[in-house]
Each structure stands twice: as C-alpha cells, then as structure tokens.
Amino acid sequence: MTTDATTRIEETVKANDVVLFMKGTKTMPQCGFSSRVAGVLNYMGVDYLDVNVLADDTIRQGIKDYSDWPTIPQLYIKGEFVGGCDIVTEMTLSGELDALFEQSGVTYDKDAADKIREANA
Image (tube, rainbow, N blue to C red; front, side, top):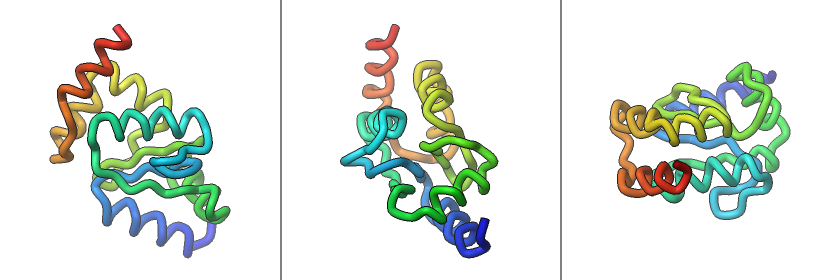
C-alpha cells in the first residue's frame, strides 16, 4: 500500500467519528453489502462520512491493507475498525452497535435501532 493511501485513510478515520468505506455512496450504494450497512446507519440517523472506494483504486486496495480485512464495506467508529457487513448486521441485531455508539458519544436513533431488531426477531 502506498504511504499516500495510508495517510489519507488514517486522516479520514481520525477526523470523522463514523466512516464507512463502501462501494458507491450512502445515497446510491453500488453493492448489496454496502447497501445493507449504509441502510442501517441511514435508518438509525447516524451522521457518517461515506468513502466510495470505486472512485479511487488506491483507497479501494489501501483500506483492505490498512485494516487487514479483505472485503468492503468497512465501518470505523472513532478511528477504530468495527467490521464489515456481517459483523455490523450481527452487532445491530444484538444491540452491540447501540452500545458502541453510546460509548463513543455517537448520536443515533434508539427507536430506529429497536425497530430494526423487532423487524428481524
């Protein structure tokens, strides 16, 4: 991975409370997995930065090297790698994502989070 990509990724995850590296954008995801994670964050009213990895090949490969995680999307909260689609889905359904948002001081809609769990019960 180039140092430039590493620096850009590091600066991005440290400068924003919640960052989603995804295929496409939060308003127009380009893959089902990215769509699912963006959908959860959007529904829960989380303010997050979306980084479209399809727009930059160095970031697309760089984020995989940076996290040592082979797939996109990748969610970061307060500079820490949380996981991809399956992990975020599991954390949403178990309530762990709510707890992480609360610990991190990230604003989200608790009622919306509860509705996601009810719909998937």
